[in-house]
Length: 114
Length: 112
View 1 (cartoon, chains in turn yellow, blue):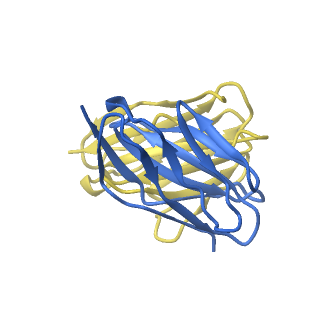
View 2 (tube, rainbow over the protein chains, first blue to last red):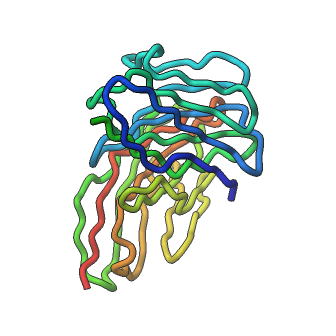
């Protein structure tokens, strides 16, 4: 299967600070990146979709100024949670897609805002 | 729009019991279907998939068959182990835009 690397796997930050999460496709080129959020004991919620070199498309209710997505290359996308607050604490997961590699997720990032 | 309905559970079984987790879908086209497993604190691992009607996906003793006539993709395993305890997600993917829809997830606990 395709190799996806998401970093960091967990992070604790103070309220008001920003956190950057990286997602890399190590053995394929990701033309599209999906970012999800998962609350405890719930399913995945799509936050945004980005195509390489273009602005991300955000799902309804997701603040684009709070969750900044960059997809400047075919192997790297970043999600930055700006001015984080405790309610942003969650599990964030990426899914890069390119060619036939639609089915593989990053390992996830557990964000805790204190 | 496309959607997935999944038996929510939780499901508790004894070791070596037979497992079925039901999954049905609604789609306008011909999606690909997936089962994922998620262990605590981890991301989603692809368990198996099927891309067209009557395909059977299988892996690690788990199986699921793409049934177009019943729009189902039920997950089965003949003999579960304690190590199978996890949350299982059914999902479908639109071939056109790669959008993926998930079921609510089913928590499985296998007791020795």
